[in-house]
Image (cartoon, rainbow, N blue to C red):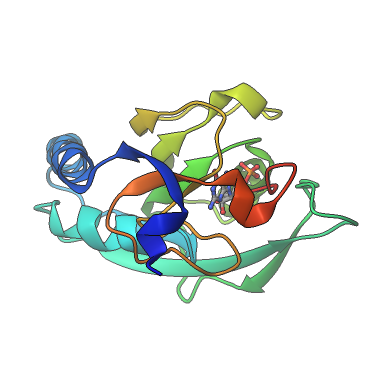
Length: 186
Ligand code: 5GP
């Protein structure tokens, strides 16, 4: 039994992801030339993307990590977010790039953007690897986007189901038989 057996289909293989991450890194390096942006990521899903993206950037960047959890009953994203781990340094006057794994309803990021904006950074841009626009509830303008994907529950390259599959090197669709019934809510 291997992790790969639970994958219905590989949506984006590791070379495709690596190529796109390299492109995003080059684009960010050009756009932020002469500046030293701080990459702010949300644990844990964006970790793998952050690790690769920062190495594709030829800039004096720093990173900061936040951890959040959604409030509310059930598994639906509520848009009410609790900060479990805050920024470790002030971002006032800094150029912030929010590095996200996937934007689904957009509610989590919408809250986070307000939270970050209150801390008076010089600028905030969003860089997300995966955009799943089908279920969007909050309008979010994505500045840097890796891929637009269909409304499927994906795993791998940092993304989990019940904390598993984060270490798959590609992005795949989880077999529905693994979670049984309705797809899990992000
Ligand atoms: P949103 O507030 O945009 O609905 O939630 C975004 C978060 O839900 C992502 O950061 C991610 O943790 C989770 N999520 C959304 N879609 C998926 C998916 O297809 N697979 C996985 N593993 N997580 C998802």
